[in-house]
Amino acid sequence: MGTSSSSKGPGAGVSFDPPWLNDIVIPNQGNNTTEAPVIEIAPKARFSNARRSIGEYVRSGSSDCTRKALGHYSKTGMGGAKNVARRMRISTKAASGFFNTFQSLRDDNSFFLRQELSELKSHGADAYEIIDLIVKHVCPNGGSVDEILCRDSGTVALSEFLDCNPNADFCNLTDDQIWTLIVMFLGNAVYNRVQLDIGQAFERQEVAYVERVKRLNEMRDYIQSEIAAQIDILRKSFNQHVDMNKLFQDTIKNTFEVFEVAL
Image 1: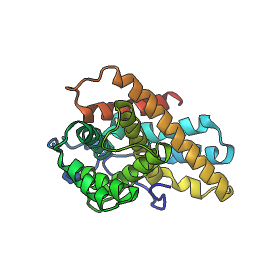
Image 2: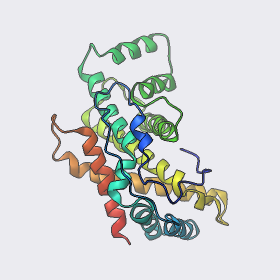
Image 3: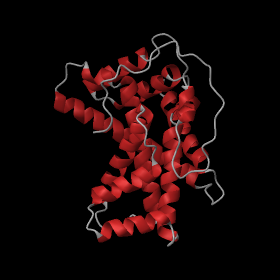
């Protein structure tokens, strides 16, 4: 499930934060601001400790190894938790888009996407067609890895949410349901990002395929549970004037700071 880990991942000698991310446009948002370029260069063997810990995790199933792998991924592989959050800014902007979209679907009868969904339903559209329309409304539609990761994470999150809540109506979600969806989206996005960068370590282990899949799912659940914990903390300060993208950037940063503590 999720983005493939067949890529070798980013190497050394490149910026932790690729400047071309600023060229990706998030649809239906007026906050596509250009961020200052980051010129900090990634070191040699940046993910070696993370991959080593991942290998130990695959073999043993130890949650301590998972935390260490994610901590090494953040601290050395990405130059710190703040850099991880910056690197994932396409996903956090999309999370903000999902949040605003579901609130508008519920509260604004004139919201154009609500009208499009209503028309789609009147033609007998199934859940997958509805999910596809919402994801297209929120996520960028280009062919870069980050854009594909964003769309994949959104599709998986909405599908899993419906699996758990088969009677839910995307046009009438409660606040708690919206926050749950955001947690699921960010959890999938972080998991997919990590998989792209260091997931090759899963493939190289002499462990049965079924066991590797089990470990992957456990790792994703662990990431999602920590994101949920950080969201719960940040929600206490939430109000209608909060910059949602910043809130979700802080969520990612705080999550990886927790992982770094394990080192």
